[in-house]
Image (cartoon, rainbow, N blue to C red; front, side, top):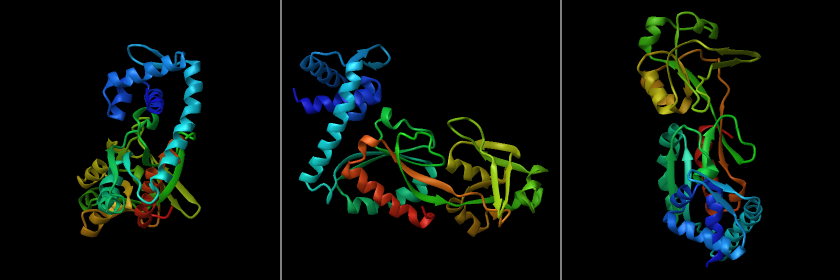
Amino acid sequence: MDQIAAMRVFARVVEAGTFTRAADSLQMPKPSVTKLVQQLEAHLRVKLLQRTTRRVTVTPEGAAYYERTSRVLAELEDIESDLTHAQASPRGRLRVDIGSSLANRILIPALPQFHARYPDIQLELGVSDRPVDLIGDGVDCVIRGGALMDQSLVARRVAQLPYVSCATPDYLKRHGMPNEPADLMNGHRVVSYFSSLTGRPFPLRYVRGEETFEINGHTAVAVNESTAHVTTILSGLGMAQTFAFMAKPYLDSGELVEVLPGWEPPPHPVYVVYPPNRNLSAKLRAFVDWVVEVFTPYGTA
């Protein structure tokens, strides 16, 4: 038995919660994953996992073993990186999850630069605005905006993205141009963005000097995906707040008009977030440093 390989497989099963998900993330047949864990348990003469039809539960002995071996595996990866000069030329598969607008407008257009610099890193990009379970889904890092919900994860802020309030000329012709945030409560419709986690729409926030307003106007439609949000604004259903970099092409062309200039919503922080046990990965370190470079022109961190 390759004990290191068995340790890595066992750790992935613990993180994923099932043998099936672990096998998928490791790109291994499920019987091979099962066999390696069984061999490891036989070698250690202890039960590490309790299996049910739906989920795997870690025994107390398994939890203690995982805690110690995860540190060993991280250190081994770092040693291997140094010995193979991976710091100069990182290699391997990297799973990243990112929101739709950040992926389509910022990250993906810059990917040729990344692959020119790091040709041996195979990037697997999950694109969605939904929350991701980094440990369970076997994701190396996520790029997300907003408040950080899990303080156990490592986060590096890469940008502060400005917002803009906008609507179509046709909408403003029908409903009028608001002069202050309070006007949005009378006769205006809002294209809302709602949280995939809570299902609640985010309010419109406005700040000018010491004045702060939070508006929950009449919602014409609400969506939970950022690219679709902009498309809905362009349909003329209402006014909204969206990222300035998303709105800029349409503001320049006249398809959208800025509303309430001078009342600037607080900027949106964007982070690269990853599990602490992957902190030493050379490929992840290279990717995170590159992401900081890519996002810098869009808003200082």
